[in-house]
Length: 350
Image (cartoon, rainbow, N blue to C red; front, top):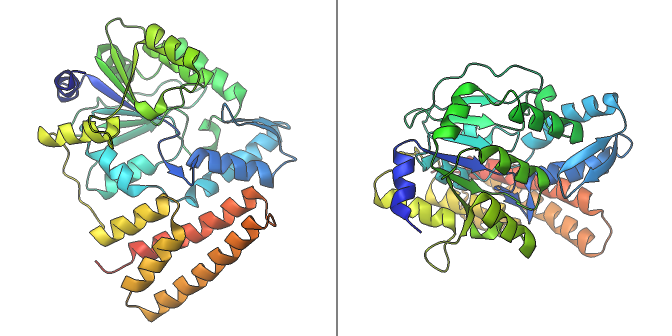
């Protein structure tokens, strides 16, 4: 693999970073899957079916769809983003980032790190708006599947997916994005499930120019051998691991950018202790995070609150092990405790 070629494309603003819905995970699930599982469990009369493989719903009727659109925003706000991971993404000097998740976590982390990106999102039936030209100093983040604060923009069912594909293949995306896609030499995909058919349609849309190199991290290689072979030969997807055994493609890319002094300067709001504790929560080790936070928090009120959270988590775990709680309800309660603990970690004296 020619890393210098990738770095040159990034440096020359001829590389595009795609962030998939599997990028941020919590206890083995993507955040989007968490949201869909919770909504399906809480509103079975409105959501007739949840197509887990494609990550979309079948609604009872239009009124039900409008109702669920309004619930999506609240659910995402209750979920903890992996800020350590997103800060590493923000440091990568891509000028154009296209996200296939409707949340604003990427934009929010950019802004909290002292960066000022442009941010826009797709809306079906709305003519592509004029957006500023992206560059390394002020990158563009574009949400392809809508934005949680604009209900009508969300891609939730097959009708929304078809509308998105129709727009992409006919009128296209905003002209400046189309221009950047056409001149790009490298596409980097992080957090994608390439088994999904609409992901493959996206690849078809991006494959209009010959000679483009596309890369994906090793863990995203499809389980099905035929699918993997098809993607490799049809779309020139190159599934790459990191250079060292413990590294991912993302880790190695980050390291090469650091060696070339290409990374953006990130204003890290959190200490090493806070970062380690946040990482424990996002890795599903909530009990360990609470224990360590109890040891390093000097505030008696915080210690009392943490003790209560530890007791709640213990009861919840006991219920799950005994089969006394539905898995969807378990994740809802687990997320509530995790979010409360994350807020306490962020308020920990540096």
